[in-house]
Image (cartoon, rainbow, N blue to C red; front, side, top):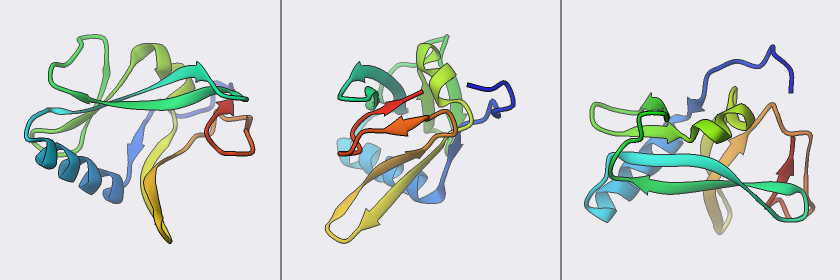
Length: 114
């Protein structure tokens, strides 16, 4: 990982809209927390969970007046400079991360290496 990678975490308009939709459908919450976990054939995978209570150590990225994306501080080193998008391709749809820290992905696309 190079030091020239931005400290930002970008959320596209499509991702913002989908997060708002998911929180509204759920009926409660203040956003989503994004992180990484060790798994898969390449080593790491992205995680996402609803947030009802913020953690003071989270990196916070507001998406509107009441909702935010929270990035787990342990995962931030792997996610800094990334863009979170929501993509529809044919019958498939879901959140996608464009991550300048990735060195490679497994063949199935479920995990990555840094």
